[in-house]
Image (spheres, helix red, strand yellow):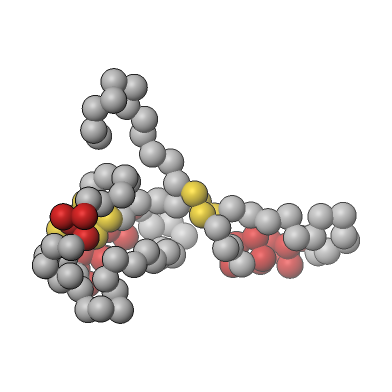
Length: 104
């Protein structure tokens, strides 16, 4: 609720610079949204969090899922690499699993 309506409860993929560390990307986003509290977990935020009048940022690393769009065709590697890097439609992320069932 604390963000403008067009940003509320949305997910964005932010592409940092190639050699950026996660801490630098987080710092950059916190500078842009100084009132926001950083959520340091990857599970879904609770309803209390999403309906709160405060601002929250949940930042974690995602990996693009590369489609095999040129499989079996003779396409120059630079063209293939361009699409593998820039035409990504799906992402995944890793989340720790706690065997004891406790919350992380």
